[in-house]
Image (cartoon, rainbow, N blue to C red; front, side, top):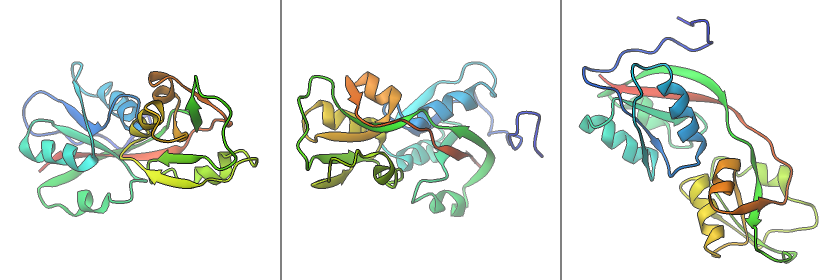
Length: 191
């Protein structure tokens, strides 16, 4: 049943205090979605950020978190729906933080063929956001938009397709226009 917020009512988790697992590190869209979910659960549940959604699922099945938030755009979400020991508890729509292509704030002029790192899911945004003056020499993947931003901050790549919070956290500046992604988020609990 949909409530006044446009959410599908949240199915209760097994007994115990709530804790929410999702994809980290800090600055991911998933973290923002988990924080929004936390406003609909009792108390102020801690957010547990993991390197992959699969690690968050392991925490759920081990009982160290009560809920896991996963972006429906995640290419490998199907095992979450197929598992027989977890269940879909809710879904909701939330715009991501703004996405864009960023470089180090202290970086000089870009070559005409820069390298870029991105999480695989938003990769189609590269064609929309990359300035026409550049053609990519290499497109690599990271487990999250925050990890992509960190890789650019460390000098391993020229550009990152990342979110505004991750760019700020890692001292990057945007060279492209910014845009959000309207996304459906799934919330899972143990059965």
